[in-house]
Image (cartoon, rainbow, N blue to C red; front, side, top):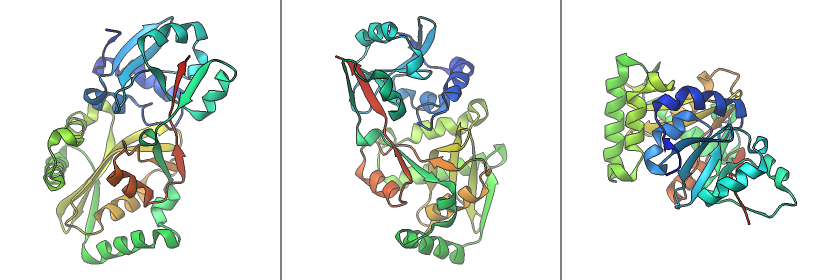
Length: 284
């Protein structure tokens, strides 16, 4: 088996390398890789002086991800590694020109695509297409008194209550949702450097958001959990969080839909400003 299972000991190594790539692709985050290691069997290894992560996509493809801009890796190294994977992933579209004229195959799947929204849009819900979001936001504000706090030890029990109630409301098994990954994010929020906010409606815990800086101008939202008995809760927390984020973050990455039609409809309804395709490349 190539490499060793990703663990917290890899945080310092991967954090620095992934951040230096500075692309708004959700997989270029140690937190993302670590928390979803159970879904993707992530393993870390080195080859020819470069660090790589080996994983399995949601649709069963074995891939290798360089912890750097793939254009920096010698072609001989990539071709040698091709023997250990089905393809290299996720590649930014801007990198594909590097392989122009070579015998390669580049593909992408819609389920891998990241949804990115401007912070300005989420903080205002402008225009006719987002009028339903504005209406739901208005209904929530008129129905409840809301309070927001940074997540910390003092309110962690409330965050766990929200997660448990959210999971119960899904009607799905915990293995079918991101319950376990989110639980671990709460358990290790200090160690992983995750930040976020918790929301109360009339003094009762109602929602939370967990994420981190992905690039210099992009925040990635790893988890957003709300209790739907509070009508408009998601519209409120998305809007409020966008308003309180530091101004340096011009974009919010809401990650991919994993091919789930329900997630696709929900994410599309906010009218994404950018859809980031993640390419799969293999030498043929």
